Every structure is written in C-alpha cells, then in structure tokens.
Amino acid sequence: MRLLHAETKKLFEFYGYVPKYAILSHTWGTDELTYRDIVATSGQFPANKKIDGCCRQALADELEYVWIDTICIDKSSSAELSEAINSMFAWYRDAAICYAYLSDVDSDSSTSTAELQRPESDFCCSKWFTRGWTLQELVAPGIVVFFNMNWQVIARKSFKGGGDFHRLLESITKVPDLVLGDSWRLSEISVAARMSWAARRQTTRREDRAYCLMGIFDINMTMLYGEGDRAFVRLQEEIIRTSDDESIFAWGFCGNPSESLVSIAAAAHRVPNVITIRCQVRGRLMATSPADFEGCENVELLSRSRGGHSTHYSLTNKGLLIKRPLLVLPAPFNSVLVPLNCFPLASPTQIFALPLRGTPSEDTQLWFGRSSLPILVDASFFAQRRSEETRLYIPTSPSEVFTIDNIINYIHGRIQWPLLSQTSFRITEVHPPSLIVLRGGADGEFYVWSGDDSGQARTLHGILRVACPNGKDYAVHFVHVLKETDQGEEEWTCRVGVTDLEQGSSLVPHMFSIAAAGLSSTDFGVMWPTLSSDGYLRLEFDEVLEIYCGYQE
Image 1 (tube, rainbow, N blue to C red):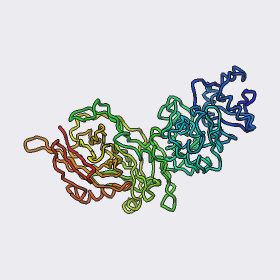
Image 2 (cartoon, rainbow, N blue to C red; image 1 turned 90 degrees about the vertical axis):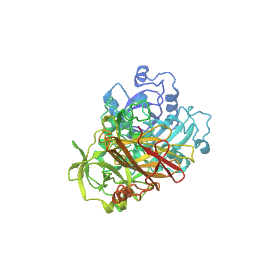
Image 3 (cartoon, rainbow, N blue to C red; image 1 turned 90 degrees about the horizontal axis):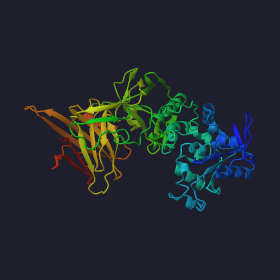
C-alpha cells in the first residue's frame, strides 16, 4: 500500500505492516494532481487546496500518513489499478479516519442540523452524494468527517450510529443507519437493497458502475475496461456464485414496462395500422445497471420462520438452474410464476415472483416474456395452488432486438381523469408477459399488442395493472378479437373491464377468477361498454377514471 507522508509530501510503500493513516474521499476536479506529479516533484508540488488541507488535518489528528486515490495509485499500471480497486473497500474500512471533502459546499453554509436537513441545502445537493465511488467511501470507514470547500467541519459519521445526522445521511443515500454505524453488517441487507443505494449514482466509465460496488458485496473481479455493461453482468454472476440471495432477480419491481422496457425507433407516438417498430424489452434475468434496482431499498429476505430457505442454484450453459415450486396461471394468461425468497417490507404477507413463459416440466426451460417484471403474490395463495418443486432452467441472455411489421391487431387506449388536471400513470404489471405495452404521449395514450407473433394475432387478451395519480391501482382487463365477416371483411370486437384494486394487492387471484368464469363473463368489473363518438369504447369508473379502448383504422 502506498501512502503520502503528511509533512514531507513524499510517497512511501508498505508491505505487511501499515501504519495508521487518514483516507480522503472526494469527487474529481479538472486540476487533480497525479502519482506522476508527486514523483516528478519529489513532494515539492505547487499548493493544492485539497491535498494540503487533507495533510494539514491529518497532522492535527496526530496521523503521519494519508491515502489519496489520485496520487497514491499509479494508474498507468493496469495491474496496480486492478489491485487498488479490489482492495479499496478494505483500505477505507481500515483507515483511522476518513475525510469527506465536499468541494461544492460553501464555507458560508450553516452547519446547524436544521439547515443541513433542508433538501435544497448545499450539503444535500452536493455531487459527492451522486457519485458511484463515494458510496463505499461512506459505508466502509467507521468514522467519516465531512468538510466544506475551506476544510471547515460540517458533521461526522461515527461507529455509534443514530442521531439526527445519521438519519439525514440515511434519507439522502437510502443506506440504513444499521450499516452506516457498522459496515460489517452489510451482509444482513438484501442484494436488491444494496444495489438500490447506487441506483441514481453516476460514474465516468460505464464499467465503474460495477467495479465501485465490489466492496459492497465482498466480491473480487478483474478489471476489463471496454467491456461496457458486461461488467455489471459479471458482478451479478459473481454474487450468484457466492450467495443464495434471490432478491438479485427482483430488479425492475418498481419499473414501468411501458417506459423502461420498451424503446421505439419511430418518429411519432401514434401507431398506424402498418408500421415497422423496433423494440428492445426485458427478456433477461440479469439487470444492466444499478438503476434497474431503483425503489428496492426495502426488499428483505424471507426468514426461515416465514418459510424462507437456503436455495441451491447455479449458472450453467443453459442458463440459471434452479429447483422451485411453481404457480401455473390458467389460460388465456398462459404463464408460470417462479417465487423468489424475498418480499417488500411494506407488504410482509406477499412474496416476489417472476412471470415466465413455457410449459413447466422437469429440466424444462422457461423464458422471459417481453414484459416480465417481478410481481407480488400473496404467500398464502401461492402456497395453496403451487406445484411440486420442479427443476428448471432460466436463460440469462439479454433480450433480443426485434422488428414488427404490419401490426393487424392491437389495442389503442387512453386513460384520463376528468376530475384531475394531471394524466400521469404507470403500467406496473402486464399479463401474459408476452404482451408488449407502449406508453404514448402526455395525453394518457397506450398501445398493447402481442409480442409472440409480431402483431399478427387474431385474438388479443390480457390484463394490465395501472397505478394512477389518484393513489389507486386499477386492473384493466381486455379481450380484442378480429373476425372475418361473410363478405370477407374484417371486423373487431372489444370488451374491456376495470376493477379497483387495493394498493399492493395481487392480480393473480383475479386472473384465476376470470379464467374460471369464462371470457364472456360480466363479473370482472364493468364489461361491454358503449361505443363513444370518437370511435373508442368508453368506460367511466369511480367518477375519476375513464378508459377508452379500441382498434383504430
């Protein structure tokens, strides 16, 4: 380990025994001194506010040495850089003290708790909280002292934990006080929750989104700059090899299939009857970045007392090999739910499940659909209807990019709120997962078509979960059939129904009820709405929600 002598400003290398040292956490600027600058000047480099301040503070704390990444790592050596990145979490954890230098926090800013807690304060808005590498620099050290641009103390994080400042750090970073006070307790936090801490953090290099998290998961990897998103996939593969934490597959739970999973290479939002659409959707087991885990900070693992168990699974050439009980959804939803050994803290009676496609049998392969986001299932309902444990394979390959030409059957809908000024909504579940859902413009439009047959299906049947701005969730069930008349012309028939759902309740029991009642049932919400003047089937519900669905020429 290479350290800078705080008084002479010269570099020393230590093997085995390492003296006590202070360590610097900071964000990079445009005028950073490097290892070569220190060597070339033999410590007689020009005045530098960041380095000089760090050394001065270390001496005041009776520490002889400091570690600063910009000058203590020779980045021209790939071997040294790889060793440093793999060792960095331990170096921060073993430091006597960490100085977090916030260069964008003005010295005139108040350090009172009330001022720091203001969302618009310099402290809360500091870029230090937005960088990927500073996450482990916050978590690993036992003591972190925060300084403003003039090296004046703002506040400190300590081993003891608790207090107003720790609560402020938790609100900003989502890292619980349990971990802020003791990094050795990281393993008590689910993989999904730890990933979520980095969901909104940025790194200069795409690969660093993975490399900066290795210490958080106690993982060692080789550095392969240039591999892009593959680095994050490798990180997940290493976690899977050393952990039975299934929350790593719960990414995307708070996502929106109609926004985050579908990208459209088309000039307009409206889908005409004939169009070429190029789509890329989930269809994969692995996330591509920590951003996919946003909103998962409250995902916890099931305890043994609640039916949780340690599961053996492994990566093979056919994908993830796992043995689980399954829940087979009835036609027309035609999908299989694979339970995960985790749940959201807000819904302790439910568990996560992955909706997959395929026919379950021993050693079969189940596939992700176009909109296979994790869903919640009531644990008791699942226990009543689940199958025996089945050994199956789940492919890990990323989703394909595919092209759809000449869509002949799709739903074009609008969701509106006559009593509300806003029309923002999220489609959070799609069944069956083979359907493709696309959000339109700001006027509440959406489109649904089948991904299995490139939009050529004669019957379109599914159910959507819509989260609305009035704080409610709704199940939108639709059946859309294209038929040929005796005259050889095509005509369509559309049925749509809406049910008010309790927030967090599962759609799965509704799907079983629909299948048991038959496609023509009027028991599911309000069915058979009347045709409106603009060519849509209009349905008013709850005096707040209006659904328009139909096929448009």
